Figure 1: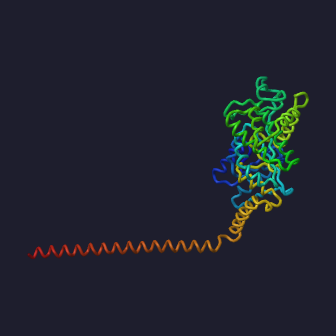
Figure 2: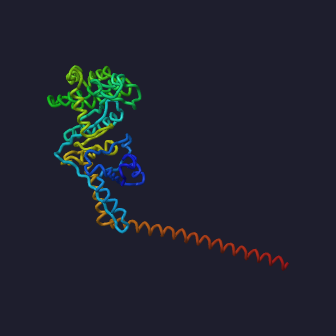
Figure 3: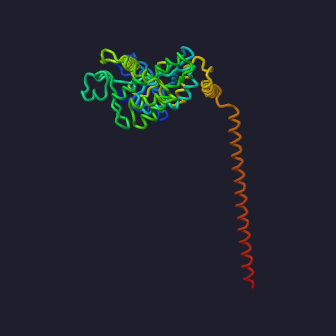
Length: 380
């Protein structure tokens, strides 16, 4: 249990995790009241290293817990449950990122196969971060890294090569339009490849980002690939039509910025599943497990059925241990092992004693023989 003002929540979580803790409760400051909706826990950029749940609780609840925990005469049991959200048998999940982020491409490329298998049950929508810089940024910065006069900006300080924010925002727009294009085509023509957006991302990562050819020219070259075959003109028209108020605003980016503010998203990659944040490592296993947990009937998916079998097995083992203690066969096995170990030690001990006795007898015989010969020599 930590107070919010001790240090940032990521550092707190790492400290608890490093000492073997299973969960962190962060107590909000007293003057913030009991309403937690406007006080999200922010990531300092290293939140991916945190593997334990982190919960923000009100000061009132926190004080009550601390008071009871510090009472030496009482044993406190605290149970925290996480309820899954099951609106229907489909899951909508979002990945918040930017088109220049290598980690996001890696994550999505690894999940591509699972996404195909879950196509009937789960839909991924990409979203792109931006920030407003129309009031306080220098004119040169706005020119290089912003669109619409500073309304929508991005600056990738972590990029391995020099990419202007304006180019990143332009690619973000293309990818938004690409996603809509692939989604609309799937509705209109079932013969179209529903994975065309994912295929584009994989190719863009390899041929544009990794090869340091980031930009419109590389993007359009990938769209024209025979195995991808995206209508370049349709994407250009979509980007152009998103400009509103004579280029002073952008309908698509405005929508992204509004949703970003709604969920207080400040870093990337960031995953929302059924509009709930996914915490911990963004591994294929974790994403799949969370999606399956949010399905109303996960057994209908072969992938989720396997995950559910594992989860049920783990829960069954936990219940047996908590309700019945250690199973009888485990106790028998332990006893057999102990008896066998003592038997082995006893055999070794007897052998050691036998060898020691033989050595002692031999030593006494040798001594007696030596004394006999010595006595015989004296008589001569």
